[in-house]
Length: 466
Image 1 (tube, rainbow, N blue to C red):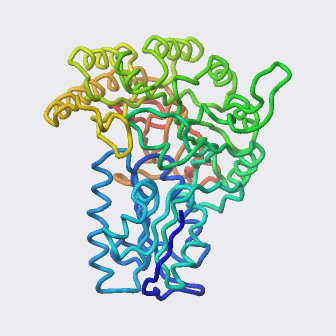
Image 2: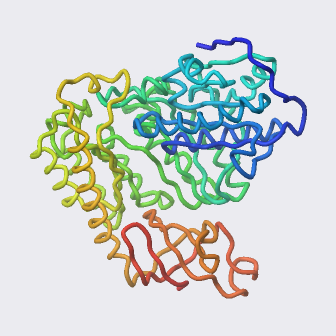
Image 3: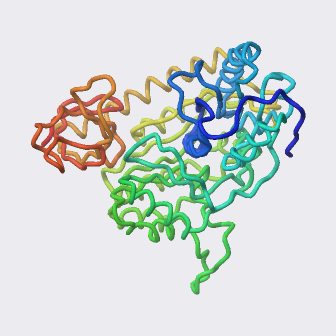
């Protein structure tokens, strides 16, 4: 739906509109959307503000996966609403998943808002702000086809870029609000994805992460069947189609779903040199009964076989995952199976969360909700285990020489550069001698260097140039 109603017109219009500030909550998809919206704002004549409380336009790109992220948004909005009462020309925008979920009710809760827009409307920000400039209060949460002519994003990195390949999600996990707020799957055409990657390479980007809420579903909604009778457009086909883009040295993809993670995809990743040995594959629970209650569509044994296949083809591959503890009805024994799986697999990183009931999801209404005390206890124990296992995994790097893509200077230590290994380990290393580097002036972001690893931590490494 798109609803409008009168609002005090902000003092906008024309070049040099003022400054903007975007705060992003949540996942990589939100970060990519924020970059696109920043690009739109700068194309309209806005400049990035030095601080949130100085901005003429404030945009919160929101997440509703967890209740605490949602509540944080309302806290931020309260502060901005107070600003707007003193300065009616301030423009307030809520985008993303909370905007989609709450819609017009956000205006009732925070009447100072000018624009509420769901994630499918991110590339319409300029059009919607045009309505705001005409004195309207706008709600844009209707089903919207995401056009291929994606606007030029304002990238936060000089080296690594997100490229959306599929929007939305058709899964119906019983705990997850994403399908209702991000809509049904919409795959971009491979030609458009390749064209965007070629443009990024021309601007000096070296690493691309292909993004999708459920990226293994890429192409299901595109027409075409091969002579062998399989879908013509799959993630495997896409990786093969974009692998030779000149200038792009590394390719990653996220987020995967075990139900659709195929041996064909694994073999392609092993055979394509630019595809990094790093896979993010959520498992959510180490117990089959909990997985059935979650409607995940796979078993723990199926997950194990995926990891075994990856490591048989790429022994050094890094595996990261997502997991939820204290799902409704989860017993102590089921929880312990999750801990056992974390230790057995040996994950390099795990994003952990205690179950949080989300609106309009089946599990939110189930009677066997666990107490907050149990959630806290289980999450703390899991986090301690995750860090211990990650530290053990990091030990394999000690004394090795790793290829690192230079991303920039360590913001906490200007004497150090920082970058990532192919397996996505953040790595710090000392600044080079002045005569080294591509141009004789030292290293630059985007350089590929060899680093001798001397110090290992759970989630990062340190060393010196080899």
